[in-house]
Image 1: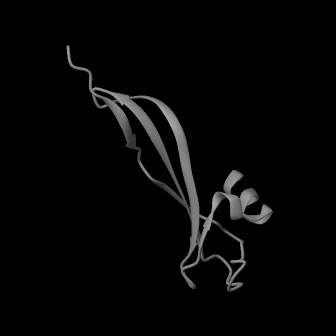
Image 2 (image 1 turned 180 degrees about the vertical axis):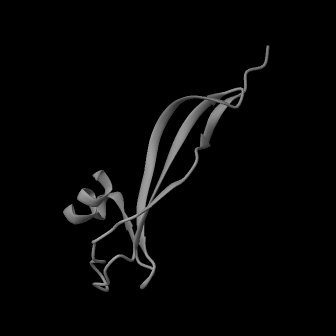
Length: 80
């Protein structure tokens, strides 16, 4: 019997962070947050989520902020 087991990225979800200033260029409403889960799968069927990769990018200065660099203002906008 052959088992096909591995990991595979899930569907990306994007969200524009309203009323949030970019910490680098100080432009308002230019940050877009991206969240992408990574699933363990068996026979290409997702079984459970291993982790979720999150980052935000400013469309003005192109600076990328990883989850560890999120400001409290960014965290509040993501949770609302």
